Structure formats: structure tokens, C-alpha cells
Image (tube, rainbow, N blue to C red; front, side):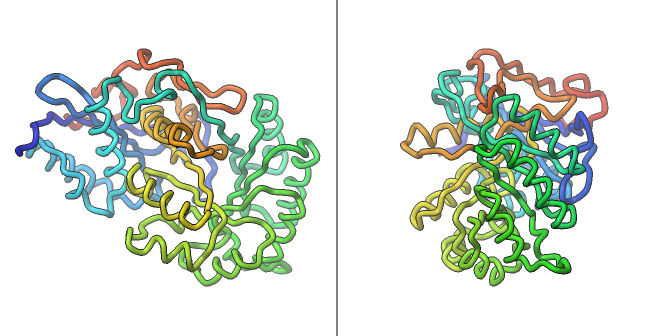
Length: 366
């Protein structure tokens, strides 16, 4: 059967951060996101977002444009033809197609969350900063009602890291506290081995640590997972792993948790495959957004919330980053008291695929 023809339009915006976003790969002032709209002959529309993180995302900008031009010429979308090297584009098109076929607007995975009837507990993210800035951020998040915090480690000398984490622990001894090393413990530090660092962090009653070593060091990660008193989560280690090798990776390394970023893993279906492999082995998971606008965040949140509907008991998730930008997609998404929710299904406005839509400094492709 011939596929229905689709009109495909898109625009690439430079999303500007409200303040420089300090990451393990340097400070970001802006980042690119492609907003993609598909429309069928009956006038139904679907939206998706292709969000890139400079220095981390696998997708190449010119390859994204090439694939979108090809799709527009052929007027069809075949997900199997999207190269594996373009996981963010796969996520965008997968969610756009799902949104197109949904009965509700901006609801690629409709359910109670998209209708404003449920909410998702999320962690409050502490961005990289000075020790004083880290503690101030934690105080602000706690006052806002967050009961789970997450912070990056590895940017400061480890003795200083211990001090500011201890200060936050004294400030809020009962809060769930996660840390993320982004592979930083692979870098040698005088006086500390990676295991010694994990032992010291475990004494501060932390929930877990993400990616203590770089993804290429699978043997080192496996050894740490077997001996660390602090539970270890894999994040970057999951990126680019073929489906046939995922179970073997989990068996070899043996993590306690997986951190799933659909934009980096190839979409919601690929993330679901990781969940299935994890649950076979008793490995828990949570989902994290990857600096998407509200459009991409909405798709991830709806899919994540459906985990509750299907019987999964969700841990606090890593969502809620949509408020970072000065030029975001207006949406009904809200963060309040440590929860992400939507005001309802009828408060979305279609983004303008033209310069004045989000920003005057954009590259138009329509």
C-alpha cells in the first residue's frame, strides 16, 4: 500500500540560554534545535524536535538538512531509512508521526499527562558552579519543593567536591541526592582512585552516581559496579550501542540504573528497547531530557508518564529543562513543587516556522 503523502516543513533555531549553561563540555550560550512539522492531505499536523547538544550529540547538522530535504522531495517518512548516526532526527520524526496520528494536538503519546490529569516527579538540577553557587542553587530548589536533587561532579578538586556535597547534605539530610560525573573520574587525580571517590561519596548517603568513567572503559566500569558501595548508573555508555549488543553491555557492566535520553538514543522506541533489556535484569531506570525546547520535552514527558499507566513505578525523572531558554516554544508545561505537569491539551499554539516565530536570527527551511 502506498504511503500517504506528507508536507514537511522545518526551521532551525538557535535556542539561547537565559544564562550560560555550564556543562562538563564547557559553557553553552546557545544550542540548535530543528522544529519539524508534518501535514497530511486532510490537514492534520504532527510536530517533532531534533535537538542537538554540541560536543555530545552524534547528529551532523548538514546530514540532518540532507535527510529533511530528501523527505520533502519524496513526501514520505520511512524511519528505517534514517541513518543510525542521526538519533536526534529519528526521535523528531518518530514523535512527529505519532503526533500526526494522535486524536489530540501535541500528544504523540496521549494519556492522563497530556490531558492535565497526572504529573511526573522530577529531580531539581544543580548546574556546575562555584561551591557557593552550588549550595545556593540547592537552597533555591529545596525552597521550590524538590525532594530529589541532581548535581554534576568532577569539575573541582575532589576534596572541594566532598565539602560542598556535605554542606548540602547538612542543609537537607532527607533529600534524595544524585550526582553525575560524565566520565570525569577517568582523569587521574593525586590521592584518589575512582573507587576511593565512590567510597567517600557513599558515606554522604547519595542515591547514585551517573557515568563515573568514560564509556570506552567498560572493564573499569564493570569493576566499579562490582565493588562500589554507591550504585552506578550508565548514561553516555548507552549512546550508539546497536540493539543486538545492548543486553551484552548490561551483562558485562552490571549497572544499578540506566539514564535514558531519547534524543541521544534514537527515539522513544529505542529507549523502550533499553528499558526492556534493563527490566529483564532487574535494572531500574529514569528518563532525562537533553536540552530540548518545550516541544521535545512534551513528547518525552508524555511517553514517560505512560510508564505509570502501564504499571511501572517511576523513579523521579530528569525532566523539566524547558525553562532554560529565552526563546522557547510557549506551552502548558509547568514545574511546581518538584513535579512536571501540563495544564491541559488545548493550550498549545503552533510554533511559527518563520523568523519571527521564536527568534529573528534563524535559518529557514520550508
